[in-house]
Every structure is written in C-alpha cells, then in structure tokens.
Image (cartoon, rainbow, N blue to C red; front, side):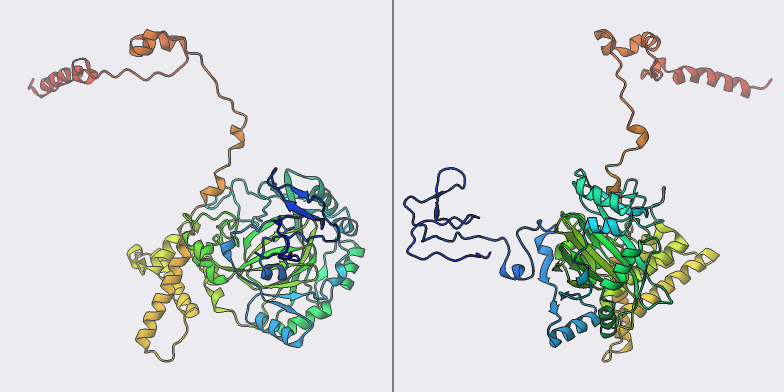
Length: 543
C-alpha cells in the first residue's frame, strides 16, 4: 500500500482523512459516515494536502496500474511478477528484448513506432473507413459474463462427444457501423469485434488487406503501419513472416479468457489499454487443464481464472503467471503455447494482432507436452474414436495395452502398431540424452518421463463437459405448461383407493395398474397351480 501525497507536519494535531478531497483545510469527524468538515477559524494560506491511499504498490503503479481501471478478473495469487518491459531508447535494452524473444519468453516493447500513426482510430472513424457493406462475425455475450469464448469452426456438431448445446458466446452477422452502434447502446449484452483484416500473399513481402475493405482504409493500413520497423524486428528476433493481421475491439471490462495459440504473435495496442495475464506453457497439464483438441472450445483453459473451483481443478492452486499493462503504442510478444488472459480496461479499446510464422528458432522444451498432446489425441481418435482417446492414452501410460489387444485380428495389429508409435514419439520428444549415465539408467529415466507426461495429459481431461450444458433447456419444453387436475375424491377414496378402482377409472382418464393381491389364497397363480397339476397327471397316465 502506497500513500501518494505530501505528508503533513508533526505540529498538526488533527486526524487526517485518507480520502479524495480538495486542497482545502479539513479534518475528519465522527458525525456521519465518512464526512469531512472544514475546521473553524482555519487559515486558508496553511492548507493541508489530504493523503490519498491507493490500492496498488509502487511497482504496480510504475507498470501502469491505476485505481480507475476495473478490478482484475483473476485471483491475485496468479500474478507472481511483471513481464519484462524494454524501451527502444537504449541499445542494451533493445538487445535484451531480442534475446528474450529468441528464447521464447514474453516481453513488452514500450512506445514503439509500429502503430504510432494510428492513434486517431476510434469506433466512429473505423465505421467510416471500413464501409457499411461488408459483414463481419461479431461475438456477443451477456452483460453479466462479458467474456468472449470463440467456438472452433466445425467442432461443435450436434450429437458429438463434446457437443455444447448453447455456447456462452454467440456470433452475430453485422457491419462495423452496426457493431459500433451496438457497442455504445447495448446494456444487457456486450459485443466484441475480432476479425482478420489482412492476409499474407505469396507474391508480396507483407500481408495485403482483404479485397472487400474500403480503399481509404486499405491505404491507411499500408501507410500508417511501420512495416520497415516490423521487418527489422523479424530479422533480429528470427521470426517468420507475418501470416495474418486481425483487428480487435471491445468495451470496458471485456474479458478474453485464458487461451493459447500454436504460433507466435505480436499484440500492438492502438487505443485504450489492456491487462494481460500470461501463464507459461509449463502449467498446461499442471494446473490449467486445456480443452481437448476435438472440443468446440479447443485452445481455451477449462479453469475459470476469475472464480476457480479448486475442488474440481486442484492443481490450479500452484499456477503462477506474469502480468502486463498495455497502453497505446506498446507491443507485446506472445510466445506460442502460452495461455493469454486479456482484460480490456477502457471504453474504447482497439488493437492489432500480428500472427507470425515459425521462423528459424528452436522450440522451447516447455511447449513439447502440449504440442505432442494435440498430435497424439488426433492420431488415437482417428483409429479408436474421440470417446476412447483417454482410455487408450491411459493404457499406454501404464503399459497395460497388451491386455486389451487381440493380436490374432487385424484390428488388434493396428492397435499394437498405434501404441508403439505413440510411445516412441513420446520418448523421442520428451527426453534428452544424458552424457554421464549408462544406457539402462537412461532408459529407465525415459520411461518415467513419458509415462508421467501421458498420465498428466489424461488427468481431469478428455472427458465430457456436462457443466457447459447445465443451464440448457430444450426449446420444445419452453412453451409447455403444467396441467392441474382437481382432486374430487372423498376421504374414504383417498384412504382406500383399491376399493374404488372402477369409479376412479371411469371418472378420470388416468392409467391405473392392475391390483396385486398379496394373499396367497386369492393369488391367481396359486389358484391355477392345482389345475395345472391335474392336467399334467392326466397326460402322463396311459390310455
């Protein structure tokens, strides 16, 4: 907690109120709730500066935090440190930023020239520049959630293993002008713009705008984005080419929950500000529980970082991440397979996302488990189906697949080949050769390594997600109303309903089950047994 103001002198015996107030001379009083009254006979020339108590530390304030921003939409325990911030004014700082990028660590570049000329972008300006003819996919969420989770195209199929009956985020088709109007006027629902506006062309060095964009907006993208600076950064950080460029815009306190991408990105803040929480790839199977590759929410974390359920996701208690505040002109490097939890902090937030190619840099070892998991889940699902992926991966992890395979059949042969290929790929990608160990010890270490990773892939994952459909109701049942039948029975009829069966059956169109007599003397089966025995004896006697 940091107090930001001028401290009063010891001669002042009055109690100073820790609250926002003007520079007039005032003291606290016990009357009322937090009222501050002016002191009698006060000398205006000797004004005291009222202290202001902030809710952030000095380091947080230096990184850009403010009391005017919405409260962080994640638990405070998740933030362990701040992302390294490097400026462009010093050569040493710039070299450190390039080294961090080459190592696959996130870094924030302060006040870059990449999108500095786009500071005039607003919703009204973009509405005029992007035209009113082209339609875009707009994400829509309820105001109580104000969180936007995109559904993977082609994966939310009715009747599938991971089918989400009613996704939390819906997609609307509208122009940018209509989106800007809805963003300003809608209160019960919130909208977010997140679409690709530029794509790479093999004949050009930089991506070209989409053909249906207005010519003025296309010219703006070519002239006002510093492509020369971006090209120099690609060479120094050893990035690949720019694949696509997407435009993002959302209102205040909008949330994009924790999501990872399989490629690297550069996030450039144009207007407004964002609070970014980055979770390292090491925690993918150690606390973040990503959705399976065949799930409609593929790429997102199953854990709600705003209100995590530690009973359902116990490993999330040990997760630690890095935080960052992006302001206009800042550029953030987002490594591949790191989970990004983004919160918009102002009413007008516009940013550009540059999706980069793989480049010539080595893959960080922490990304290997998540990358392998995506590949192995798809391979096992092709042979055994989506619902059996967890079963076979667990068998491979515990080395129990031989008990479930019949080698005398063609299908059994295919299964044993699949299991061996999965095991070999895990051992090859998840272990390093040890120079000072024998071959036997090295093989034992490898087995322990890949077994632990495969079991971690299945823990809490690759199962149906019924909590996503708990609030869903069938549309056909929404208009159904209950029918109330008046009970006209007498007290005797309620007490002894078996004595009035004919009356109840005739008076009401209700199904009444047949009476069951528990007395053996009057049981139909008991009464029929002597007759059956007599018939059997007659059949056995000779003629």
